[in-house]
Length: 492
Image (cartoon, rainbow, N blue to C red):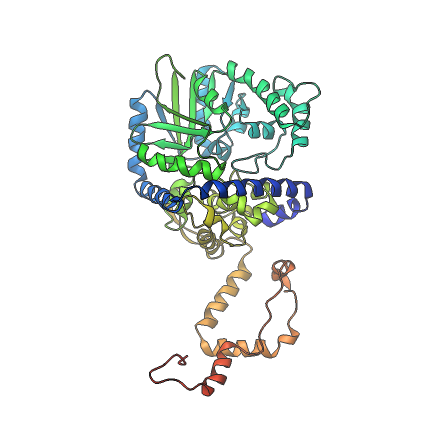
């Protein structure tokens, strides 16, 4: 996967993709603004969500152990996975133990993150996505491009063509003469998935939240496919990131208000499924919870970057981001696109690859993402923090161990420029001389930067250097100002 700028250069030339994204994100963001405006105490609710998450992260070890005891007491079994390979191995062995070769899945970012479908396929196990958007992505041999709406880059005509061409290969074919009317497309998907639900013996899910005090898992959704996957199979396997735990049901109440309004602009989700272990003659007879780390402990060790672990995957930040709207989700090369992906992915995977080192720069730093975040993640602050790590390297937690990471390749010029600027700002005479030289030579300044700076100035105008620096202006004019008695405002 190339670095973000190269991938984005390709996607921004796709006019159909940009039109689809513009229509979808503008529609969702307008509805969200209306839903949020209904609550007078949204600001306090937002602060409460951030405070609960911060408190939970500070005592994460305590709440995870409490959760494990509660799940086990309720008849479930807890597995700990340090990374993606271990999580995939655990799930594969659990499915094999049932003797089945097919599973149905609820939409899950954690399983996208670890590449579970691919790992199961290599083991001869077929995973069927049952969320409508995920079904479109799977049938189209595509990749998700949005956290909440994975097929946001597809329009209705494209979806009709995918259903017509690919559904028969995975099960019940699309109806003859299928149109691109939303009702017809939804009915085709319903008929196709109904067979999967009724025949499935194993279900795989993630979870939006885990309640430590009771061992209860929570999935919120809009289509009802999740409820089917969570209740009909004999065996349920849930893969969940360790940061999804909340201490109590009272804490959960806050997030069940924040999440639906921020994601789908609804006052509450149509389906909120909760389950605690297993129950005789009701639901799955076996329940396995796979707690996934996969870099989250490293993010937790970073006092600035850890706020990314507050994320409740609402995707509000994607819908207001000017960079995401033009580049689309595939350019991020991760299950987590958009602003939250630009800070979460480099912390989970590190910044050593060309792609991951480029993600903190996939932002204009306009701050719109922070304004809409329901748990007040200061994404611009974390972006700047990660850019410093990319350029300078330094101490960080790597796979749970403190280490000193090297600067990423390709940033020598930026590093030299920042160090030169730092030195000049520490030496006022040098700074003054440089400003005067820049002012006197300004008519010779190029309109575009040469060398590595050329890409930066391809889409920006260089700022005009004034004829006189503020410092010189102040010294030239201060003598003409008569200070009042006791007024030292003219002192530089």
